[in-house]
Image 1 (cartoon, rainbow, N blue to C red):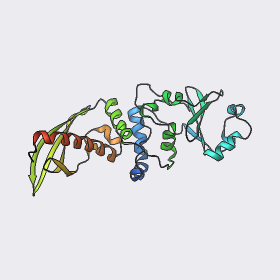
Image 2: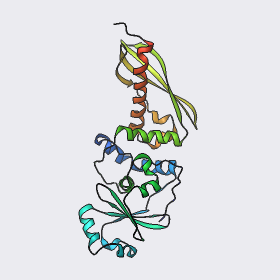
Image 3: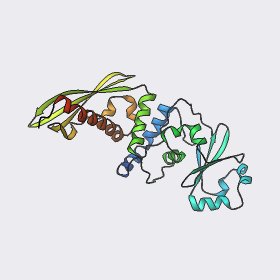
Image 4: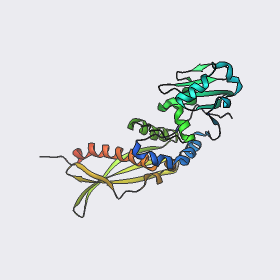
Length: 254
């Protein structure tokens, strides 16, 4: 039941996003697992066992729990989870405000030791993120925008993908003023360019991008990440670039 985790890979356990997008993630659960395998070389499928009864706990752990302690935990906090790491079995307990790991020798880990060994501390994730991914527990977890962005940035780095945004031009179409940028990607597939068009008034962005294309089609690694997350990330980058660039290219005199 063991699994190998390279210390050089970046970890994408589950993307937890705001509640309005949560159902979208559930529908893409299998895609997220494939991404985990492809980018990181890790497959947790059938390698974590859910414990819902004291009878499910291996005998090696019995001497480390006081009588009735396991049942009290299950009643108060829900299931435990059994997994193997580096040849030893561990019980994972989600205590709410912290996580607890107990190995078959009775050693207890409540700091960040196990997440660091797994590598999930890189993104500030908990082991429960793996649990949720493979057991599909519908928690109302939220994510900050910075953590969501970190997911994309880790993928860019691990896949050796670089990009740069350039101002393209100002144009007019059916009475609308449009300002556009090109996002140029350099990846294993070669050089790819992705345009974005924004409706503007003066030097201010009114709406956009318009004539939206799916940016996940530009780089193969993006196909394993939910589209909304990739598109939102680069839309925000393009908007920020354009907001800073427009007053320089088109000074306002009034």
